[in-house]
Length: 523
Ligand code: HEM
Image (cartoon, rainbow, N blue to C red; front, side, top):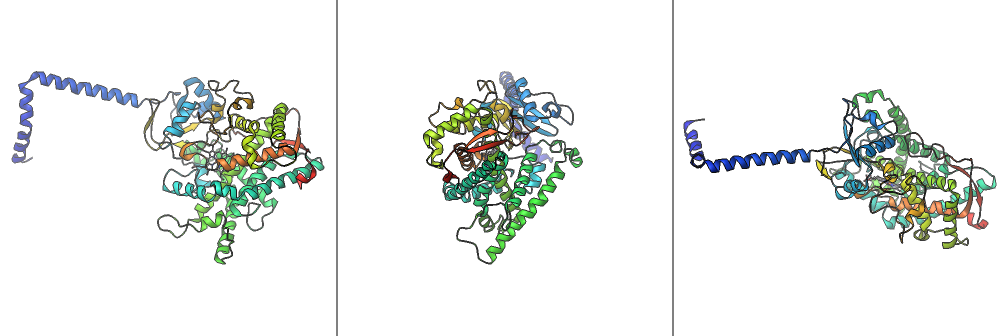
């Protein structure tokens, strides 16, 4: 420092030094204030940095061993032991798990803007071309744009109403096929029945035709497509150690990457042909007046001034809609029939209500659904006992935050254990019993829950945009099935065993149908 600068510095500090040297009391006060500030700041920091309780992590693997082979069971044990929120280190991933409505409310409602992103993992990389869809897309402009697009082009009340006729036709096809099976005394595979119903309804909305596939795809191609989506859904809901210990990923210990590649090679072929077909139609200007959803996607501009959306984005959105919309509905419907077959007294209650509200002189319609309280309570009970995804689609925090006094670092994965939430003994009486009556007190039985004791569709900005459509497909499909047929389980005793690690029935539910309405209702 040159001497003139030193002089100026000395001049600047002089008055303060004089003041200090002149008054030891002031000096003492200042030191005290400084010390107090330091102490409070440190105290605040440790309080704010207090992570939720949890088991001590091992090096590298963290708490992976403590989560067990079925994560939704293992994590339930952890929340029972450590409290309603548990901090875990899953390999290299920081996570919190909860099964308490108070914390669910915090993550999905009060701070949903903080917990609005999604983790990148093996499934999202392959199935969604690295998050180009909605469900696995990280929070940001792409997600916002794609979600808005689906909400406005496919899932508005007006669009849903517009496709009412198609839904009704699909319901009628289902009754016809079931009648044929009944006449031949064939057993009905209810998983296939509900799978066909939901995927044909979505196919009509997305492609404008019955079967999902290119050209005039028939039932065989549709069945292959359904099987691919079902397998993909199973993998998405499975645990993969490569997501948590990246070093192990190349070993593909669960075989998921191999399976995903196989699925994607078929899925790519199917969706490429669908897109090509639509592009050709567009080029020849033969699209009909009511362009379908694929046409709409293809006519949209892309990001950053691009003329159109990338083909991988179009594919990712289509796969998302079909995968998110079909299995969720059909798995819920299959579980409902399984529990009702296991509890014939409950089946009788649902049927009696339909007979009282609708009668046997006409079929149940969408407009009746609000009045079918027993049916709604039954499906709500299924959402409590058998939610479709054990941990929703995991959310990820976008910044450091605090929840109920606990520090949650940026990038933490939030695992809402929906299985354990629905069976939490602090929340529910007789949590393991199938008791739809627990929801019958309300004037109108809403299928979601304001208190967040169940979250069948998630909530907040990442909540399910297809909840209205999904609810309609599930309720109407079940109502028609129960109104039109008496059902007897194909095997006795009936097993409701879950597939290992998944929240679906291990074996498809099968039953015999016996018609109970006048023949013209099945035509
Ligand atoms: C009974 C039927 C359905 C159930 C139980 C269901 C359930 C769910 C759940 C639990 C989530 C995750 C929410 C979260 O992470 O907070 C979700 C997300 C999603 N669902 Fe559904 N769903 C159903 C039907 C549908 C339908 C019919 C569609 C569309 C055709 C659809 C499209 C989506 C999409 C795109 C997302 C991702 C939302 C985002 O990340 O922004 N779902 N659904």
